Image (tube, rainbow, N blue to C red; front, side):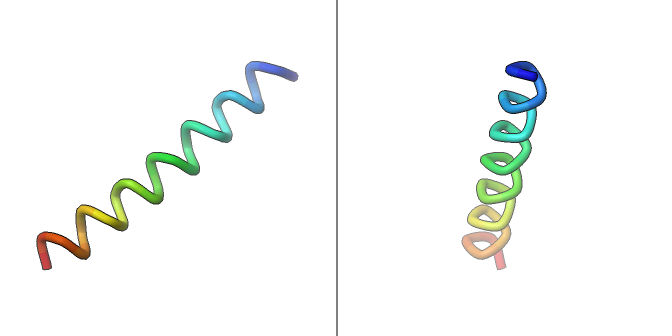
Length: 26
């Protein structure tokens, strides 16, 4: 369960990070 939560948090952070970088590069 804890591992799933950690993976979810990492996925959300990665999604936000990619969105930020796309906005900066665009």
